[in-house]
Image (cartoon, rainbow, N blue to C red; front, top):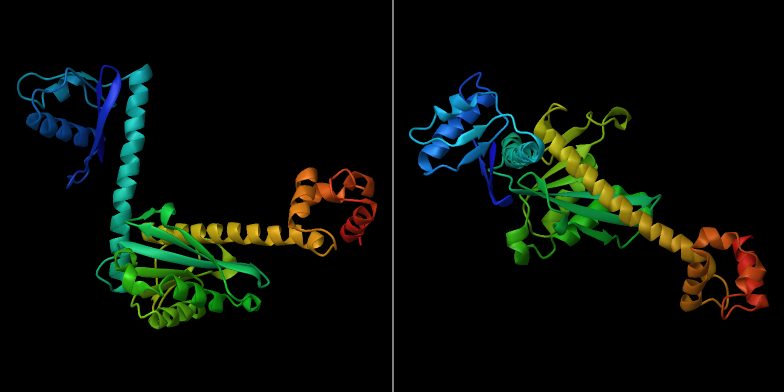
Length: 330
């Protein structure tokens, strides 16, 4: 990948990415740059007055690639010029990674026997022994995570920590109006889990009348990263090396779904635990509860307060302060 940035009057006015369709065996960066300079400035006339690049070729060698008037080539930039080139290198790497992401998805599609994967959704469930169970769905399009399309949901029943039931409910709810969402449906559904979670997702898709392949990421021995197994909905175990780009892409999506679900679960759980102690105290309503927690900076600060400190809050008398203190220090 080559990133070209156009600068006029010291200001960047445009950027473009160019990708080599093929490279000769053993070709290096200097070969790529030389070929690009000859092709690009052969088509775009007249060339700019100055071209700045970090290159193993000399200015004379680059000028020889162009017939007629050649620009002044700066091949060892310094200061601000070097910083611009470094930024171009970073942006070229990002563009190449994004382009490769689409290729990786096509490689994965071939492995599981479908025509293409333009988008996949990844699901995870989070809870504490069944308490405050939630699910998340994150979206990957052409190898890139699309945070604006992430979704999270509370699960209707705690289910005693049944992850399979949680996956079944989450997938069913996500695609229950599949007919109306044809433009945003995935080519593949990925779930965090093994055969049980895969089977639950398949059942949920059938109930939603939406046909889609399902892939599970089962944790390996000792739950060590890189030892996961990929289980397809037909029972096939897909063998990808831990260094495989498609494998890492699936790992990243699974980790992102886990992070998104866990953050939401903790938020629900902590909010519940913060308020439940005061909810049980007679005489403390939602408005007074908020005032108390705000005054002491949350439950941790409130536990350090004595009955006398509580009476400073409007609406808290001596008797109510005593009841609150006893609720926090049973």
